[in-house]
Structure formats: structure tokens, C-alpha cells
Length: 460
Image 1 (cartoon, helix red, strand yellow):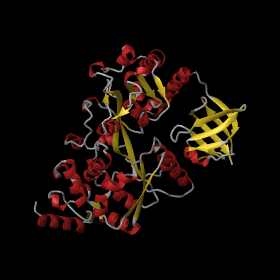
Image 2: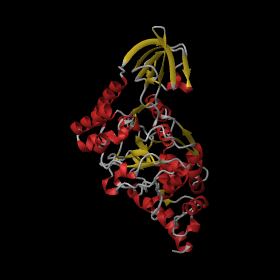
Image 3: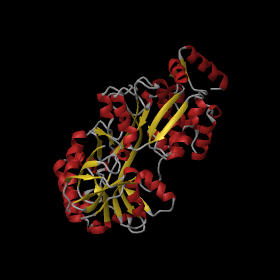
Image 4: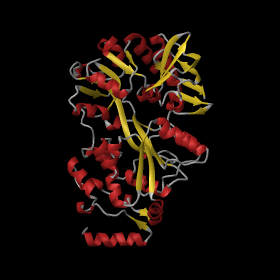
């Protein structure tokens, strides 16, 4: 198709009540935003990977006009600000005049705070990228815009869609068995998860696990069954006796690369790729059954700048948006053929696509609660700790609320405060961890000194 017929086709669509962005079809690479051309060139992929982009971006003219009238969209996500600024460049070229206000936020600020605001009738964000397991809370409030009418929706793989159509997968993460390539031979790697507990190679301090069972053990619970998984986890904790790491996943992977331990459960492909590019001796391998590929969702909030949010999310979920995100943040695109075209992590291992299971937030909630309860019992048994509830006055708050200090029986104590695993209440209302201040009287439920608190309930 030459440019002139292309323009006639565009004019016909506009007349019919549809509009593209500032630019149109990708049939000719020269018609793409300059930033998209730059990204394709750097990634060494042809513009043909953007097939169907014209249909995906054929938004109703009413949406485009509404977005321009609103003039802005507020996004809450977890991308580094520098990454986000880079990957939305094509959006700015296509839709000039629509400002994107981005806030990188923890789970509380990104998900819980907007939820609290909605309950009081306020809309403080237009689109959330990553709900941290709370999509059901937003659906309860009927606060999500249904996305089935977005032009891009029909192109999105079904495994990325929620049954309701109220949220859609924006990217996916695969977590498996990570290892230090200087210490572990490929021939030593476990072929199945059962090999982890039967092979003495992983006994003792050679293996580490982080306190994130939903990253991998949940899938085993679902695929192998409750009885099998309970037996497996019991052997893992009490016979293999791995190091129980207090760090988050990314920090633990850095320690793995530094040689602190030989292997860990469970690392991510994304983080592995980043560390490998820095020369870190780290690899990743997926025992069978392959742990789930977790789908991280994006949703649009009702009552705010809905048109601008629809326009942004529609572009973001298009092939152009997914290519831009991979270029800037290295998240694998949601379209499998883009991965096949080279937009993937070359980490020395590729899971069999036929054995992958895609896990969304609307799945396995009951199983997750049961599995985490069993896991916590084993974790505390290994550490010799029991959950205690104490009344104390906060003597210090450090690291932006990540650590609370207090005294129990005259002894100094501190707890770690997780944005996802710790419930923080102030005067009975959910609050961020930075809302707790020195001098507040609190009830603290925690397993022991320097451990992650389950709940902190304070009064001003």
C-alpha cells in the first residue's frame, strides 16, 4: 500500500467515526513515529512485527476528542521513571497535547490509596498498572471500566484477559530455579521439583529461598495437588533446610550472583537478564512442572479521565506499545510472536511454551490462602519463631517506614514493614507504612525481632 491510498483509507475511517493517532498505518516504516523507528532499529526487528497496528489504533473519534478535552492521564505503575519516559515517546508523538502524569509507587500508594479514595468518592488515578492481587477489590466497587470495546482488545491473547474484561495482562513474569553459574553445573540442575528435595546437592546452605511462596509453590499446589505439595514443602524446609532469606527477590538474586549461596528459589527471567548483561555469573532453569507465568494486569478507573486513560491503555497494549516497553524496560511483550521475533530474554534457558501455565489475579485465591498458611507454619517452625501480639510505643521509624523500632519488656525490638505483606492501620483505617510516626501507640503482630510484621495497628 502506498502512502496516498493509505491516506484515503484513513480519511474514510475518520469519516466513519474512527481516528488514529497523529500517524497511521505501519505498512511503511517511514509512517511510524520517529521514536518507534529508533526502537525497532535498536532492537534489530522489522516494522512488519507491528502487523495489525492500524486496526488496534482505530479508536472512536469520540474517544480521541474526549481525551484531548481531558488533556491528561494519571498513571500509577512500577516502572523506573526513566524507563517510563522513554517508552511513552511514541504515544506523545501520536497524541500530542495529552499529558501523561506518571507516579512510580509501592503497592500501598499504587493500589490501596486509590481504593480508599474511591470509597470516599474521589478519583486520584486514571489507570493502574499492577494491582498487587487487588483487582477483586476494585471489581467489588464496580470501579473498573470494561475494556472489551477497546480496538486492541480482540488482538490480545485470551490468556491475558480476565473473564469480566475489566482488566487485561500488561506483561508477564516467569519465576524459576536460579543458580550461580560458577558454582553449579548444568548437569546438576533439577529436572523436576522433586529433585530439589531428593538430591543432596541442594541440602543445607547450598540453597536459599525467599519468603514469596506465591511466586512458585502456588502453581505446584494447583498442578500436583495439596497433599503432594505439603509433603514436598515439609521435606524442603525440614530435611533440605535451605537458607531462609529475609531479602526481597531482587536483592537475593544479587547475593546469589555474589556467591552467597549456590542456588535460590525463585528468580525471574527479567532480573536474570539484567544481571547477566552486567557480567554477573547467574543462570535460571525451570524444573517441571514449570512454575506459572504470572500475568500483571492493567485497568482503567471509572470517574476520572476515562477517555485519555482508554487512549493510553489501548496504545500501550498494542504491538507498538509492547515493543516500546520491551525496548525501555525489557518486559516481554504479551504477544507470543513478538517474543519469537527476538523480543525476549536470552538467559540460556527457554521454557516450553506448551508447558507454560498463565496465572491471573482472578485465579486460585482460595488455594493461595491455604498454601500461604501452610508455608508460614513451616517458615516459623524453622526459625523457631511464633507470632506474638504486643502493645508498644514506636521509638523510631527508619527507611521511610520500612522499619519500626519499639521496646518490649525493656528490650529493643524492630520489625520490617512490607508494602504487600504487612497490614498497617492508623485509627482503624488502612494506611501506608510511612503514616506511622515516632511516639504513636501501636499493637504489633509479628513473629520476632527484625522479622516482617503481619499487622501494625496504631493510634495518633
